Image 1: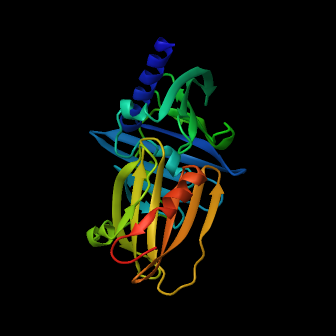
Image 2: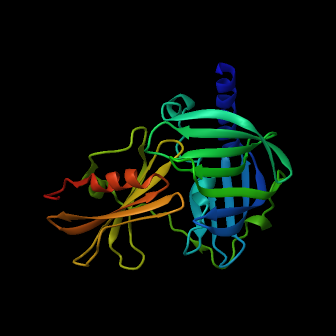
Image 3: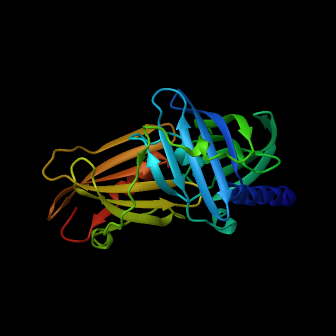
Length: 299
């Protein structure tokens, strides 16, 4: 068992490194909440710079092009599996820290997209995160298939490549379509907005990865965003002033993704706090209800 655990840790380390250093392209099928979609993906890693393009091949041409985690252009709708593909591209976490909240196990071998693969299970140690089953390319340790499972080990979503190529993508492969709109990266002041809020509870192992405040593209109202992660799972919190608008709290789950909205009263009016991410519904609800306004009297 110690030898098997060491092998699992080694594959986990190879996988994290490969996702940042290897170039590839391919097509995959994505299943969530009983719905199927097909996608093409290109990734180029060169001199420490990572460029990616993701394009939905059925339905509307939903698309995202980005470099080193910053979006260059995107469609009005974000491609559904982007969270799965970017699982390991947030702020790096060391393997020892991840081992406090997940157990890594090698459970066998498989063959995906005509390539030999090993099966690595990332099992959650508590109820605040999901477990995953990863099929990693034996040659490169890149992801060929993933299954997200709940605490009953039932599948919540699947991603599986049907073609996979290690050749470097061309400039033409990264040419965006008409639906991919440029994304502005102008700095936005967020210190004052963020200082007005705190979380009374955060799932163990999660930490703040990034935050900013941007105006809503439709209303122009400033919306604060906080992104959290534990190295595997991630979720976001959006804080939007309601300006006397009526809004009800709600909880919803589609596949592994949950959305929980909770209205907060402050001395400056109502604010809707929305938790969105790939964590269990109970954990998301607890996060939403633990958000506190510190800039005045809130409840």
